[in-house]
Length: 128
Image (tube, rainbow, N blue to C red; front, side):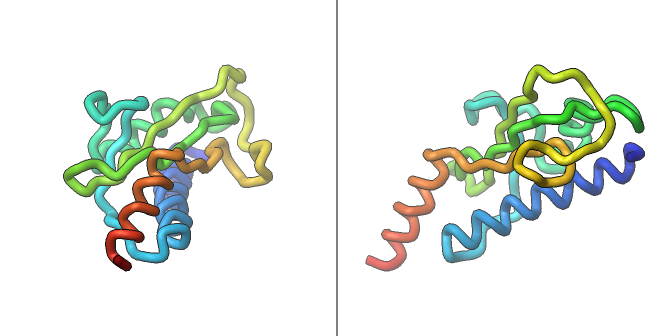
């Protein structure tokens, strides 16, 4: 897989995570997001940088991609942005493949309990 195709995969993965979150939330979510490492005060990439940032973290070359990267929808920040967080497992790079969840590529799509609790509270607030 070449770098441009990998970047498209990153974009599609982010969008599919948001779509799954919308199904869980039962409502539309913003398409404003950022990336960080477990803390909103440590946002490391704004929306326009996320695809490149994740590509740099995971893509080595056309034959070497880190095979397992947890990509977690972690929170909805006070400003309304979705916060993605991530963790690259300590496996050596290898050719493109399915991850252990059976999906193509390295991204294991997850949702933090904090995010799930927040959408539950927001859903409750709108129906009360």
